[in-house]
Image (cartoon, rainbow, N blue to C red; front, side, top):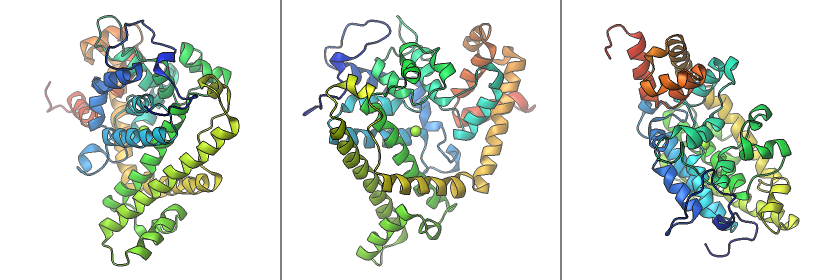
Length: 374
Ligand code: MG
């Protein structure tokens, strides 16, 4: 990594792992973390988890895995532009959605409602739980034993009551300090990725139209540029050319504005970054356009009646699975039964959260359909 900024995260200055390990001969600590994430079971499951559209609805829609790869790619680009640590950024991006339930936000909301009296369920916290506890691969410890900086980046937000239970990684929510710039920028890469790919998937599915989007400034501005340059362009290329310009507008603005804010505060090292307010941000004009785009997607895509129907089904499946297992933990696989002796609700939530969309559907059928065996 050439030209690493003095305030970038540095693996040799990492706050370390929970369990000490000898360093790798060939990789820095953040590269090693990234590799552990890619080899995890939870990472492979991302392929069959929903973003907005349920996995079996079509082969061209984003899944959590392709979303995660888009986030990692954008985040690395932003990190390189700002002279921040690409390996750390990539590790955070690849792990950021590991705790997601099946069926996207509908699944998470349903599981959270089921867990209301048992500490709630939050996918962000669950991502941390996956890498700290649920992956059982190493002889010496549970979880992946990742560096502090990666775990800090995974925990984007956190309620104060939970922060108190999380040790060093929860402390910043109590102290109101900031995470590394690598963690901050990965949040933005996540948002840029999903807003834009949801437009793409939304148009492909026919749930939203170009005519509707032409009223959204960020889309309209870039659409006008493409139409002026290529007046006869077919629709598929028109959409792609517009979306790639939107992504570029957002990424360039984020890099330019953040570089400006960083220069104003002149941090000397990562400790300064932690004491300063969050420095990665869009300019106010682009932040406003981005906000309007999100409002549009919420109204016209995430609450489209066809998406609502899928969400309602997902809610029902998650709720019924939870009740079924909670009332009879003897239905859980052995390893979850053992944990259910200690914390029944959390064991059921961990089991459900780990399911892919299709596994949850199958499991529901096995539990509730009389004709289904096993
Ligand atoms: Mg995400």
